[in-house]
Image: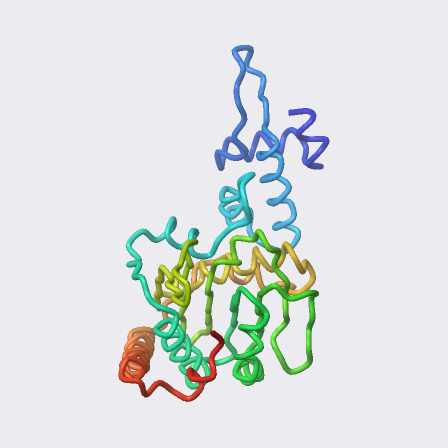
Length: 282
């Protein structure tokens, strides 16, 4: 405990209080009663200290820190599957996923009031094909951020912030679209398994308009962005730490979003998808 205190900057008394009240951090107890902490527990404690400095409550900071491990960076798809096992996963080809994405994007423009928008495009060229749409969405968004294999971080005026991901990053196989606004909550997340046949891209896909699911997706996106651009989000992670309130209009918003998604998917299957889909990346 003395070393944990020295390396974390917290007093031994604080660590004992956290352990008693929150069951955190979790030490190994030797037969002598002495505590032994792993490096990952130190990492979690430091994450709590950092989150507290950003304004998160202690309980929220600890809850987020529990998800940290010594493996790869978090995956939006994996986090949602873990936290919300009721979400149904379907295997969809890329054209179908594109139609659903367009529906969410257009509903965001139509109904979202100052939304938070997050997107993962895997490769920069995929984003560039949709950049004009995202610049239009960013115009009325409170914050818009996209992640792809960009060569460097950019914060262009009038467009989403561009955050690079590495070649071995879990996001390199994910299709992510999150819209979080008081009047609309929606997320669409796809995971592309390795080994797709040539010319055919299939994604294991889930989507939700449940407020708390979308809020969790936004939190994961914030974690991923904060690792790469610590100053970009400001107070946003603290605001997302609390559960999303359930507005009375949520059911209507879900119905209208679902209707748009069904229509876009039907048009796509009929070969009459919106022109934007025809211009989509391969």
